[in-house]
Image (tube, rainbow over all chains, first blue to last red; front, top):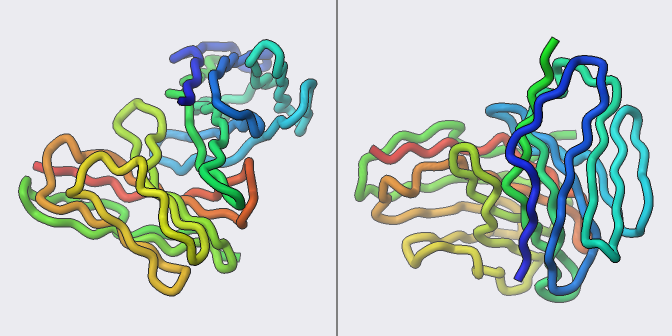
Length: 113
Length: 114
């Protein structure tokens, strides 16, 4: 089976840096993804790591360590609009060609002035 | 281009009634997924369609839930004899065959069973 663990809530100050951790257990590993979801909105894709190391996309970076079954999302120069829930997700390959995602329960980030 | 669309955006129904939720995926996306999200929870996989292959129904919580995808495009999720525990946001997503990371989500249908 597959499971992901991430903190339920994080609070950070505007302009600061925050790290959201995710540990996973999977049977077969096909990468770690991160999604953002604002209240009442649809999840939107942020980043994906298939290999160890850091991937940077603007203010957001994502890190993966396959040997530790661990990853994190790093948000820099926090803005109020970054207040949202952040989900890590791993694909499960049911059969050749496509993948369903298993999501963590999400981390609710609150950015305060 | 147009994203994933879902209808209705909100649905209130009485316990025991049947409901149908609709999803229009992004044109050209062969994979389509249904997820359920209860208040404050993560996304729970329900079912996915991949091209003309048999759907993966492993996530459906009971036989009251069913889904179909006509013509490889539009999908309908049907919940029969709704129960209060079915109240949730039902999200549809689509992507290109073989895409491991990026799924494009619709805005969801908020279902409330009274």
